Length: 301
Image 1 (cartoon, one colour):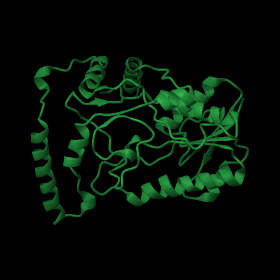
Image 2: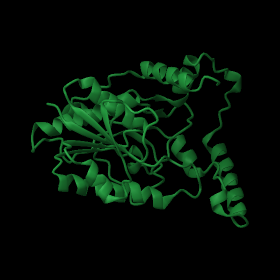
Image 3: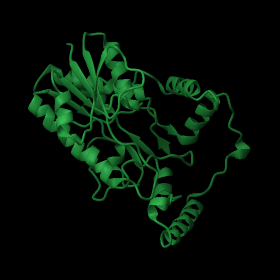
Image 4: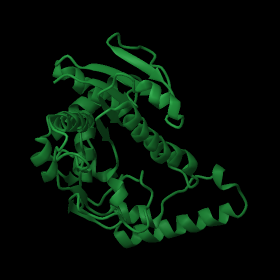
């Protein structure tokens, strides 16, 4: 069944892949994109709306004639001790409220919203967690991503096209019935193949045409890492007494070490059952696609 899709944040990393997945359906659906800026090279088959999620009238205007909205927009994560909290909340919270309200006013029956697995993170290991996992009483940085590991902790690395594919599946399932079991549900979406961090990093490095020499890999114990992080935090606190925090970059912290050295992967059985989701691009293929794309866009590196 064809839809008139509006992809909010359609100029972003995930949003562009959602647009590609809708196109791949070749079912007669039309595509509109709502974003903060116009693309440098607009596509002829897409209607573009430039606007601000924080402005309700901008959002409502873009909803005209739309039957399905996929909302992927979010500010990028800023690795800073002084993150733009007001910006995050004005877009991720207030902006999303505008989207919901506009869908209701415009009579749009289908809305799919992207979130983050980090919203249920406490800094403790997350082993095969499912959608019943409760939100913690105090949220850590919702944009924090595990970036390193000790190679015994498993992590879920996911090809972006698979996530985009699942968004479109959700929209299609919602269209089948007003009482669809998909309605109001949250879904974990990953490649379903958790691997140790350094195994993944080595594969990326190898695909790039390099080999990761073992002599350059330094493995620190958890306790040693925590001591270094404590020293780093102390240095930052001393600097903060004399300099504006907005000008300082936070270094290694104990919370980041704790998260980085913990397993973090998710159970995707619910998405498989209700959405019919299976990753369409495997991890190895995803690495090849990602590295090739990086080489094309960064020819000098």
